[in-house]
Length: 417
Image 1 (spheres, helix red, strand yellow):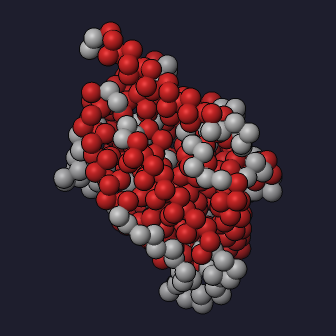
Image 2 (tube, helix red, strand yellow):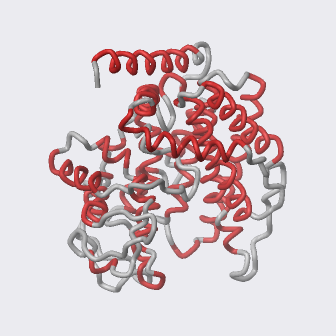
């Protein structure tokens, strides 16, 4: 590329960033720090979007948002938490992509249309959902209905994470005025209350006798993100390390990641097994369903989302340790080997055939394309860590060559991370 072209691309990305930053002046702190993505990541995404090497990805994103612009929001107004998630996934996968394009895209008209549609989705849900009593229900006397009852915090939390991310992009681009922001924040408060009610249900009923389940880390990540959006330190502390939260992030770091010498809990996993250092509690789902790899990556994602949001607020959880030294790095080093050794495919998900020591436990599990997206922040945060940099390089060489459809409205993507 000629020097003049490089200067043009650099100048254009700077103009975008200045516009994004200028719109934040006088607004919330998260416009300066970010929540799941920070201003420097926005700048990187803007630069990538207008770079020829990223043209194919940019075209694919444009196609997605062009379709999403035609999609009317469908706020969920019934009382099933699983129904809330299903409808919310449809709308907030769209809202997140639309808001992202609105901030980094290179077509001014399409950018504005994307921001408008993303805001339309966000406000429709903020005005019409999680109203008083909507998701309340009596404890089901049998296993039927338990998904809705026990999953309240999980399902609302997953949508809250995507909504907070879209909100940050909209608000910090100047697209959302104070009145609209206040309506959205009131919704975040209501969702936060629903998530905490879901946590209470989990603890009161001692579901599965588990204190290390991925539901609990989803509660934490969502409440932390809401706490940043609302500038509510109490909520952030509750999710991070408050003794009022028996399953806060620091407790979960210790309970979820095996240290290499701990036997598995009785009654769930293979009796007598001692997982390798870095393996994750939810691996036990291999025993009956062959879904242990999926659930391990899901739980790692939930821990990573909170760690990434906290890092942008100045708290480095990537260096935090459990009682026996367990870290997110340990989990990344272990599960990253699956992605480093097995090429990604969006056409036919490959099954585990190789991996880290003890990979045989996961035989029959699918290596899903989303896994490559979920570890992007870990790859960045540990990029200077020589022992795992080789894993990162091999993961990159195995990346999917076609777009990955998100499972839920997650805040990580190849442009920003």
